[in-house]
Length: 234
Image (cartoon, rainbow, N blue to C red; front, side, top):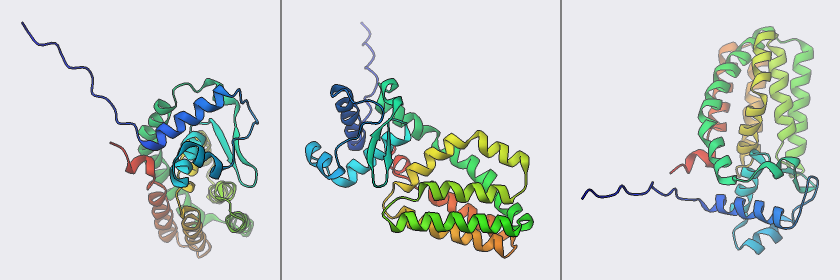
């Protein structure tokens, strides 16, 4: 008599994934809808019996998959997409699975964009880049993550490349890039590091050095790729 096959190997669930699933279940059990706020992070961490770091990672994961939105000064807000999110861990892992490809695409497009921007930028382009840097710095100084400023900076660099096709391609992957932005800027200390990377890119563009601009952008995208979701893959 032949032995029956073993069941499929069980996947190890990470703590932050369990916390994300608990939060999602709690939102549903308490009837929270779009626009409702979660308790403050300190209180939520105490209720769940986890560290603030683990809770923060869980909230970032939920934000990346669209269940919540973390707003500086306003807390964590439930989005309209929560009703459609029943398999949180699967959604988080699906995001993690496509992260490497998104980052490869960003690297290919944005290093070229930075190189072109160094050659083609105008004074108006440089002013928009500086405005984005200032906005990001102000947000970080106030305790935020600099998400909007980060988005504005990359948009300004793309515009400075004066390449309609590259701009369209970046627009096509905009939602995917936003996922990597949220995940990266949710890492401890990352907003300040990202701002420093942006300044290096801006300096090379201002200097009209395409090779330095491409290298600075490549280094920045490499830093973005160092995220917990990838480091902790089993």
